[in-house]
Image (cartoon, rainbow, N blue to C red):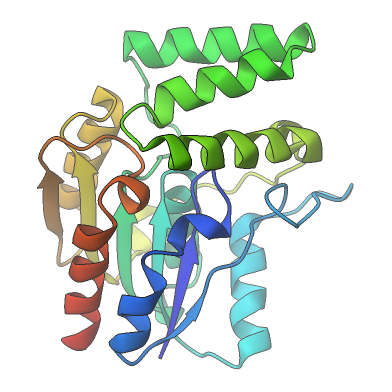
Amino acid sequence: MTVVLLHAGVCDHRMWDAIVPALHDAGRKVVAPDLRGFGSRPVGHAPFSHATDVLALLDGLGADQADVVGASFGGRVALEVAARAPGRVRSLALLAPALPEWDYTDPALLAYGDAEEAALTRGDVDAAVELNVRMWADGLSSRDQDYVAEAQRRAFELGAEDAPEEEHPLDLGAITADTLVMVGDRDVSDFVAIGRHLAATLPGPELRVVEGAGHLLALERPDEVAGALAERLRER
């Protein structure tokens, strides 16, 4: 069975490097693509859908079903895949996922968004990168902070912020996959609330609140995340 790992919007496929060995040990084939506009993958000019790209990836692998894991922005993409093609997602694991149409109200998050937009408008990519590192990677090691800075700078260079992404309504009621939601208790309050909302909404939900952790769980708590994912996969 294939496991697809979908990275956060301030990262690329490398965020999963510490997680992959445990999934291999659980007997799974692991695929960790760069989403369009991140890492080594350009955006292109035509409108596209990240979820459609993931489904096309499964087609190319000959995988009728997969276990899908998504972090932050990648969690949003994972939700869209599971809603649009429920028969193809056997299980779903969401690490501090974003949620379309959520009413984001956290003051720090709103201030960050305004400051990032202002920095990019004036062409100050350095300031925008620094903002993202402070917002999302504050609790990480200096090495991981450097990685996040590099990955975010690359996303800005590729134009991920302005990608012509198609919009599709997300129907949570269409999701049938057994779901694990993990969120750090020190994450932005909106993401903690989204985690609790999804755990109360999706089928077969399991919510794990990681004490003392922030947003990028796969980097901050790789052993805990790897153990939780491997445990679930071995049960299937």
